[in-house]
Image 1: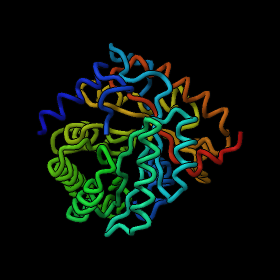
Image 2: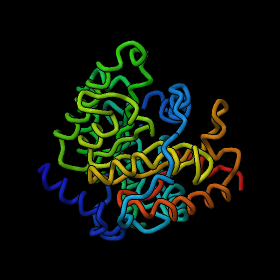
Image 3: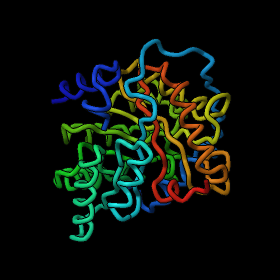
Amino acid sequence: MRMVKRRLLAAVVTGVISAAGGLAPAWAAPVQAGNDSAGRASEAQGRSGRASEAQGAVVGTAAVPPGTRAMWLWWTADPTTTVAWASSQGVTEIFAYVPAGKLAQRDLRQLRTLKLLADRAGIRLAALGGDPTWVLSPSAALAWQRQALATGLFHGSHVDVEPYLLPAWETSQPTLVASYLRLLEALQAADSRPLEVDVPFWYNEIPSATGNLADAVLERVDAVTVMSYRDTAVGEGSILGVGVDMLRRGATAGRPVRLAVETGQLADCPYCTFYEEGQATLAAALAQVDLAASDYASFTGLAVHHYASWRTLKP
């Protein structure tokens, strides 16, 4: 089962499977932890995005065409409006939040409607969930995964677990890193469908038992989305500038890598979001990243965080 997943995903990375017809790589409580935390946590860690695209690109062809987009859908929203917006923005995958615990009938009906409309529009759905405490309670994560995927609405799981938000990160980082990696192993082993996870761009600076956390994560999942939250496309400290290290590592590991941008308001990190710049600047930056990142064989498009703030950006 695992080998089948690996072979299929390797084909994605080398461009054998297209975005149109093949396999694409595969929320957090409170929701805001999945929103503002990536920008704040990255700044708290003092990450400068020193990796530069000037160091050279991986030889190869990106696995998806320019303009390939994904988006997070954290809050309940009208399915018709959501899918119409997604289609207008070239979104081919929605990370749709599935709450932990027993699904209310209202939530299930809404997800089914979202699935129906998304299928008609050629958009895939991944089950979105996550909580930092899952690192300490993997059984809760596994229960969420079983419930979400049992609905039959999702092609895989998209997990946002940020262990560095736990207080113990400051005092017991090696223990939390090991627990986080065991969590990913458990989620991967529990279901044959793709597992994709959100990661900050600075995991290469965090030690693991076998090297660094970036490589260790890539060994355990099918794909990653890098929270490369910056408001410029290329250059030092840009979306590509901070994301290029994971693009290279993904190519080496044979894993698809998405880069991602933020659109919500981040008062303490304004250069981590396009909230001030607006739609036109965001669209131009995404197109520029598409072009610049196409040299990296692992690059599988850009994800936008998140639907509610993206669609309400100023022009």
